[in-house]
Length: 80
Image (cartoon, rainbow, N blue to C red; front, side, top):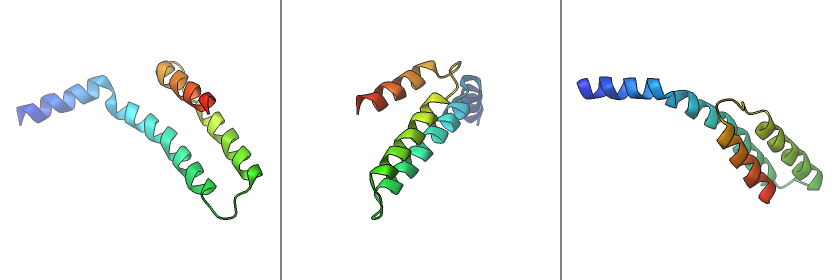
């Protein structure tokens, strides 16, 4: 039982749950974009709009706490 208490304290101190929450907020819209673009009625306009939405997600990420993650996401996005 002590181990679980120590482990939960470690997670709380590190803010891992906040980090996972932010990551899930980033990944869910990306997943939605991919599913939308795999649809049968998708055209180039839809692709462009989804790319703009994805770019907005990256640009609106908090910069204070997640500067490295934001820079990595933008670098990967621009690579394609």
